[in-house]
Amino acid sequence: MSPNKPPQNIPKAVDPRRWAALAVVLVASFMDAVDVTVVNMALPRIESGVGASASQLQWITGGYALAFALGLITGGRLGDLFGRRRIFLLGVAGFTLTSLVCGVSGSPELLLGGRVAQGAMAALMVPQVLSIIHVTFSERERGKVFGVYGAVMALGTVMGPLIGALIVEGDVLGWGWRPIFLVNIPLGIAGLVAGALVIGESRAERAARLDVVGVVLAAAGLLALVLPLTQGRELGWPAWTYASMGASVPLLASFVAWERRLTRRGGSPLVVLSLFSRRSFAGGQGVQLMFGLASGVFFLSWTLYLQLGLGWSPLRAGLSGLPLSAAMMAGAGLSTQVLVPRFGRVVLQAGAVLATASMLLFLYWASHYGADIAQWRAIVPLVPMGLGMGLIIAPLTDLILSEVPHEHAGSASGLTNTTVQLGQAVGVALSSVVFFDRLGAGGPADQARRMPHAFAGSLWYVAGVFATAFVLLFALPRAAGRKPAGTGTRQRSEERREPVPTA
Image 1 (cartoon, rainbow, N blue to C red):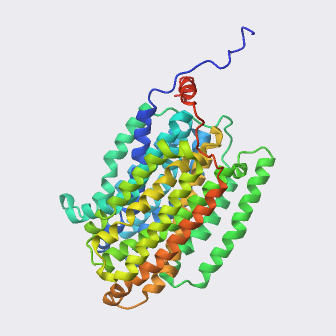
Image 2: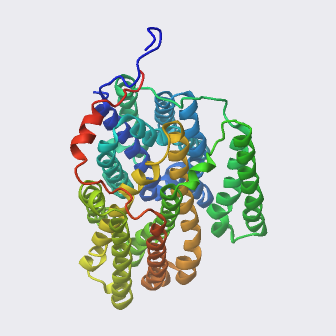
Image 3: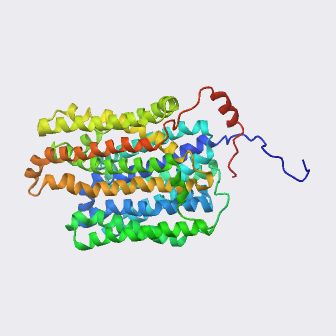
């Protein structure tokens, strides 16, 4: 070997800071998951506190999700190009600052602007989490880590309403609803300091300029789709909402055509379309979309059913979600650590069957007992539902990214998060047909009487979506996630040679 030529395959130790880095990015993920739903329980207090109108209240909740969905793909790609740690810390700093703006807002306009900006900052922060995990941990560790990630995201999603209810009813320091935003400030500052110390920098090996045309086309196409879905029911579905959704088709088609052209010319596209040639990636995106659709309908109708149909307080309704969260965490750990490495794809399909069966059980009890349903019957179906979702969500993230090259990790993780967010937006919009149409008009007493019927109708839809996810899982290779027997020793040896991300 030439003395001027660097030796190849030099063994390198794994980054000893990787578990501390994981803790930092998981706290950031938890903050985002909580902020998606924490506002819901505080809306009545926000309405009286800052004088917000009904339309402004809708945008205070929907503006975050809209900005988040529109920016996820771009945020992931920025991490690939300019450094994942750098963009992550920029997102954390922006998320912390915008949380402060929301917490001190004295007008609905300022609160709305703060929420939209908060969603945009989350779009910078969140895609880097999966990317950092993907490039920092060895293949043997990654399944365990993604299991923890799935459990934390599930916990944050379900704990959001509970945390919001506790803060609102507790009236911490007499500040009313404001601490639901201000609590992010100490967490964000701690995350900035810790992240700068323990997260190693990484980026795509062949960094290039940002695909600005792709960003504009993708944002315009997604906005044309998501905006009417967010506002359509509130406004009575005027003609412009249908025109906007129709316009999203050629806009998104133009985006795909541009990305293909840019790839042929050797550029750096916003979305690497060749990723969809991998069965695990393409099939996993379809399943992610189905779970977004299911959760968009279920959690909205379920919250209204418990509070308006059964007369539960916000705190009681929030506490009832704890069994769901615990079951999701248990399912996530069981699937990634024990079941998927042994049995592969069939574990995820068993989870889809379990989630479908839980919705059918809930549907039967809600239809049969109506408003007289016992509390335990309103909670028990959440356990198999959470277990089934946990069996799927945690390993699915790993399977989606398992065949993705490191240089495209940010783009892939941003697209994965966008799929879920768009699914939830569409699910919330479809609730106008599967839930609110059954609920009908009238006063609170009339709607409370019809609430069990409307909720049961939405459960038919949720069960159907879970069943569709079961079918889509056939797109994943049968042995997806399965570890060959006797690979433990070899993988531990390979882990000791894993390269350390450059600081």
